[in-house]
Image (cartoon, rainbow, N blue to C red):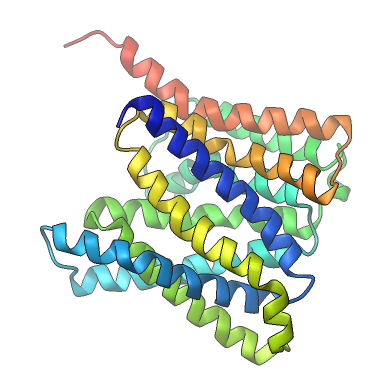
Length: 292
């Protein structure tokens, strides 16, 4: 696969994820957030299983009991991230949610400082400042205008941090995905059964969104990302994957009629720049260092 082809795969993955925000929002017109999460990740578990079996045949090491516990822990973190994001969409717009969720490239390193004791690259600090300023502008320049969902979606970065450290140790990203999807589905369905009403007609009404997000956003897009990143540089991958936020905002405007004030567009631009600089600048500085 050429680098151009790999980057196009990453762009397609970002577009699928961006469209997922629209599906998540429209689905709740028919079904509760926890039923949607549970059914979505149940479908995702089935969608990724064939790839897990293929990965298992090529794996050099078996999954240990410790690894299995880590997978379950990450599944619980994913449930927390999915729940806060989905519930947050009841009080925030798709545009806000897609951009703020995309800020993982800023918030993940910050979380690593406090929990993993890893010193970040110096660009993280101005990047974080740009991100915070972008969120302020996206809210309309008034912090009082921010909805609870705007803040809740940031917690998605916690799950990304845990998954990143674990998959580097186990080398089994697809196995991790299947387990965390299954754990999230089980937790969400348990909560939904306890607190949310549901009917067969409601599930049928939300079925297109459930299938899209379950199969494409959680299954196909993840596989595209894994394949694409094998044939391109980390810096280029960051550019294409960060476009998820742009797709989310663009599709929300086209399909849901969402609008933003001028300051909101400025905030989107500033947050997108923040996403890029924290990924690209470290690579540029490393290349400029003299050879030993």
